[in-house]
Length: 82
Image (cartoon, rainbow, N blue to C red):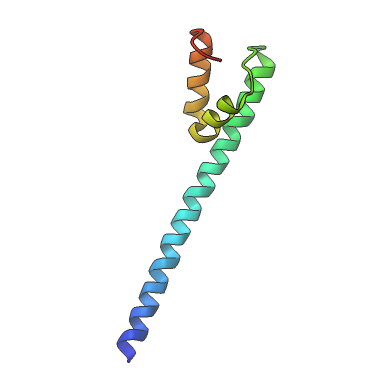
């Protein structure tokens, strides 16, 4: 009986640790995505680049973060998209 109590305690602690790591990673991703979106608006406003803030550019920056923003800027400067 004590074995199952200790096992359930260990499994509960393992679950809490993994949940903490997941939330920590998700928080990191959300903060960097919001920062990249703000940077997109700021770059677009300050340098008058006329990059349209469309659903596609929004999603690329949201999921890509800073590398997504750099991709949009590169595609814009090469006149391939945006």
